[in-house]
Image (cartoon, rainbow, N blue to C red; front, side):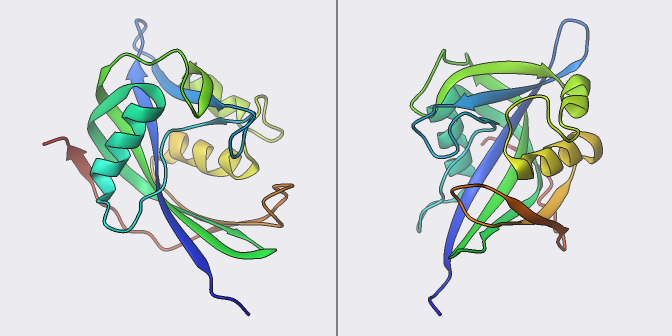
Length: 181
């Protein structure tokens, strides 16, 4: 049996209040030629050895959507495993509620961006999801929007089919609110 490969990453969800004082969540539609292409997702990426978590989260957001987080809250940890390979992704999940910049029209990772009404998004995430979203995202994103904190582990059959086998709740810890320095 081989050694498990662990990938650490960040995942940020942007939230704003619209003109009617309703919360909106920014998602990006991944380019078809990228990993998980064709699905709506948040923003983030790998945390390499030597990287610091928060600066990496900010850098990935700037690179992927053009927005610079200035205030955020750590909302949990997501673990993704694949039965067919010794691979384990650990994603630290952040909600960004203050930011600078303008969302770019497209990026290397995403073909377009859209602000979704939070309440409508919660309804649209009920299985079967009304928009193209990864199977695990139906669980954790809805839980994040409804409860504000998520600690889950997801087991997929394999990375090709993305057949979700089991979502599970995991023990939690909380980093609390943060501001850019």
